[in-house]
Length: 438
Picture: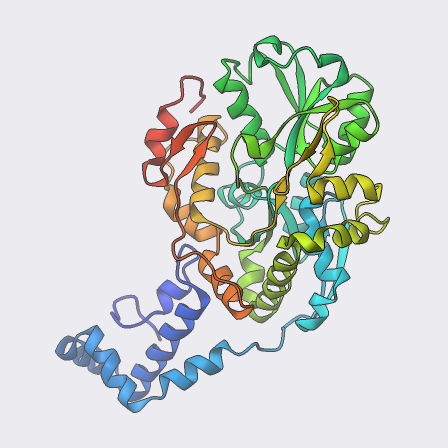
């Protein structure tokens, strides 16, 4: 039996939900541990060998007796999924494009799966159905797996992000009656909608308001409204604006009830929005299924990232089974050629982008804002949580398998509204804001 005092035994770390090693690294450690046990069945003999040789030299000695390279290569071959028939929930927004195009292009089948994608009413429903195991995996807002793992808004259940669905692709839309109120200083008393508390939309809206001197908890109202209901609420004068996902910003312009005040990329160019996520129980219990899902999603994301595919994608996902939106509205979002409701025809090719890599630094920024606004209390181990939830190494491996080049690092600095963010100084960053609950 494995013991924690065995210095060469990788199993305690491999079974640790907080371990940041990739699945490939875990496989390697397990193979080396098994080889050591085969040569030295008695724990005392193993420890004696390691003391005499040292762990690094010991690994080299073992390699002389065992074909690790071949075994590692075999371990990386796609294995048959443990479960082939799956249900994945999605919200009908353009952020879901990789999930939807993996269905439309037959990529789930290509990677050995039969997947039913299920249109879902709102993010709380997505969360609850994955927690209740009605959905095997789901389209989630990028902060949601962090919040669920920490027990913010639900019981704490470890979740994992296999890939980021999209970057940018959101906007702050205001009712037409506010065309002459473009200065946020004029917005005191405004009622805003966001799709969920634990969303990049809520965090970016709060950031934007606070940078203009407005306290988002005192000077305005922010309420949660499911994305498909945002335009109707704007038309009914229940809200003055929303920072929400597309195609609903463009739909507000299309219906003549709102205008695009700014695109979210104008706040933070390249920000994460949605993610593809599953519970840690699913990831560990069905590793082959999870790997196949990851390959299908990253495959579809690479397809969606190419500008030449956007018009065809718009035609595909605009239909009733997916977004159920006018094709011209979806095309305006995906191509970046759109009317803003202010009489301008704009050309912004990167209005929405598709990039799979789940940067750990993205998770750290999200956590700083969750602490800033009081969603997370007390000390936060930003790095540990980010690396536990965002599976950067595994996504990078899938990207390589599909011919893409992942980043060499998992942390990067950002600039949000002109303010520098260094993920290595997360707590100092939180304390730097004059308007804060943290």
